[in-house]
Length: 152
Length: 152
Image (cartoon, rainbow over all chains, first blue to last red; front, side, top):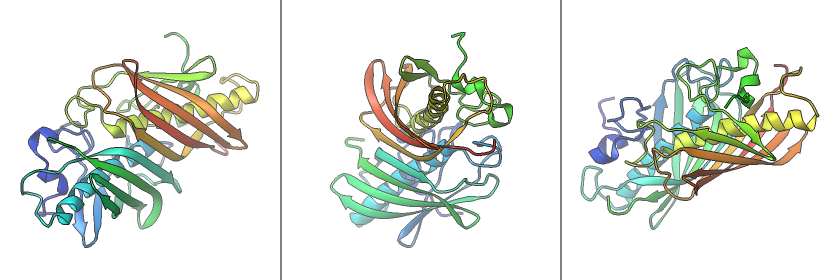
């Protein structure tokens, strides 16, 4: 994709996140985009991202939901203010709570897709709901309460 | 420690987990032990396990809670059956749901300690509650519903 991801707009000093920082060479470099009212993230697992053989590690799924949700929260906050993500001041969110329901084992080696919707924006809080699927089959659901960082 | 960790008793074919598999050379190799009625896990973060500068990545915290909890569930199930972890048949659990509340930012570079209690054992389900602290300060709480794998 040539479109910039939400995370590509984060200021440099906030781009070292292990999950989604473009400047963390050890990290997962999770990328999120709008697709209409939903945000979408696609991720290709590595063979070592396994739980039991053949299936994706749950902690990785939690990580994908986490960073995709805080990115979605930031993008939604810019939208709510009616301005683009490259305008000042920057908005950046952290996770207050994370819930993941693992509905079935997630097969490894299949591209993963996360689709999220913003359930609530209230003050500094954004609630994001996510469905993770592999090969079109829903494998996990997530909910994140994200809170806007002050003074970044 | 010379004591064997819960995860050291997992059968080889179930020891490739990215979070806790002793045979996954890319993984975190999370280790859990009994300390009386609580289980404990200690983990030293790497500098690249960061979220915002100075603090631990939430997805790593979720991963620690996840594997420590499924390990604790297995150990508790052996205890409930009155047998040691090196006896047959092996018991191994996966995560049905994971919840993490991030109470405050977790400082990086400080050894992390997770302490868990078993809230419920019922059939194939075990509920594990966890407190994560850094330098003695509680930074996150977790709850995992773990379910025993069949036919391993």
